[in-house]
Image (tube, rainbow, N blue to C red; front, top):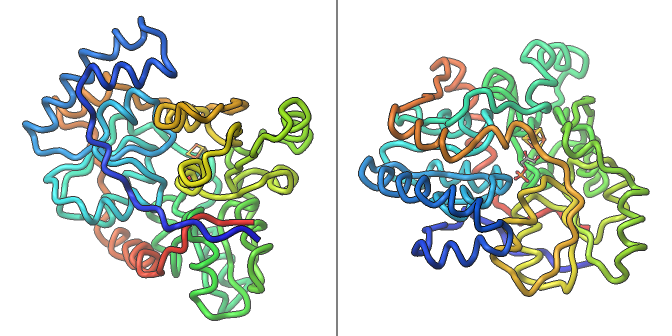
Length: 342
Ligand code: 13P
Ligand code: SF4
């Protein structure tokens, strides 16, 4: 069994001087693309300082956002923690809608902006608050653990939230033999393989990770002898069975930083490899990846418009937010152990 990786937190992502940034982005982006991004990066950084805004970016954001304009980067758990820790007057969340909504739930008094409110998530769309009420009737007494990839209304019906970075700890923190775990079936079956707690699952899937297959991963191993395979727990079980490490996006980044594998493949969204490759030029990245169309709705021009016009403010009904906040705060109180491991 491999040692537990250190817990991952949102990391300051203060942009380096323009020339340093250009050299770093050159590892993953052609000159014409960098030249197109440079004036936008400069203007966004100027404006965010002037307005007292903090930009929080998920690990799946493109390198020009992740390395160019973000103040903090991380996985869903780290972004939720940072949304509480930040003292900025306004937050701009570069990620999908549930991430911005979670930041708003935790900061009802602050303005939380998302550059494109249409940035959704197939997992969040897979379940409703009414579905949870029906499950509670069917399994009376079983607490409901909900992945943060859900709407505020679903969180409000839940006992506690979790992310891919703390799901096992959250499930075990309840001290009960059986829980309802929603909505990601594959994350749930992965968690079930790591604990004695029985999990009642829902059949929600991530449209990005469900497309990876076990034979595809096996073929990468055959073509790249000695390669280290890292996979996100939203992948199907046959994919996770082929992986050397299973963990959240932050867990995968920590793995590369700590172990410096010679060659690695990250079975997850495309921008992950680019973002980590910028930071680790010594590691060779083999890149099978699937694009998240929702994450890719966030672009530099939309971030600039968000700052200039104060759009798009995330609003959550106060009563729903108060209920949802309890579930998110219970999660934040569970001590993190780092990525899920195998
Ligand atoms: P992480 O919490 O691991 O960053 O995952 C979020 C997500 O949406 C994965 O698809
Ligand atoms: Fe949702 Fe999947 Fe995109 Fe993550 S990668 S935001 S789970 S659709």
